[in-house]
Image 1 (cartoon, helix red, strand yellow):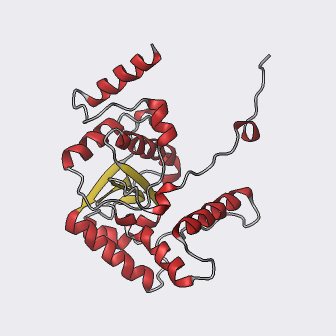
Image 2 (tube, rainbow, N blue to C red):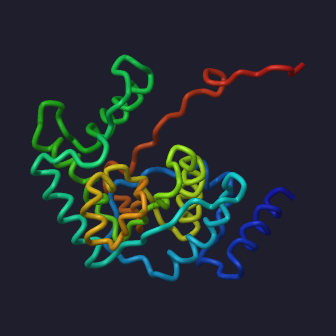
Image 3 (cartoon, rainbow, N blue to C red):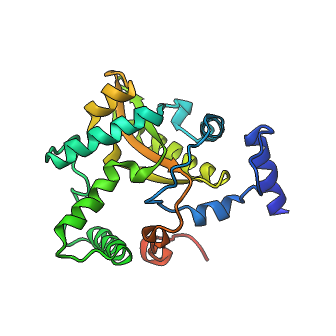
Length: 246
């Protein structure tokens, strides 16, 4: 009965534009979503991206304010952004924000970040002392991990960003889950929005729109070693407080 309910909900959201293949159950999608760090060059049709985004606009937001806007980049535009991002990165420019910083070095949160890097470098055969390969790896993020398309999440300048980040995060997660129904992979891309002047110049993003984050999207290259990674999650009992239960 529960599976039937999931099927009906998804069908309603798709508005009869059912993707090829079986519709993925909600719980299965949540469990299977992962960050994809290399994509096939195959372009993603605009119709599919529109379907994913139209579905995802059903994401919740406080008092239904829907504080998000989107810039969808592909083709020559995205290639120019990638090229200019690489130039900025190799020139040593810091850009907007600082990728991977702001976490206490002795904290459990930092440990999880380091553990991920260790496993990625192991899969990719990158030695700790190999600075050149580590730099090349970091540069992949500014290249959207070779994705053929990128979705940039925006908010109007009139909105206090700290008040709408939760809403935009809900949209971000929904996009990543909806993409799975089309056999697409995603990677949430903080690096992809560090050089915001590049995005504005070549992506046509107005100055009155705040650039929040990006999502690389495309067909996963499953032969790429880093795409094998399965990141662990902390046990529920270690991070939850339960009160009032018998």
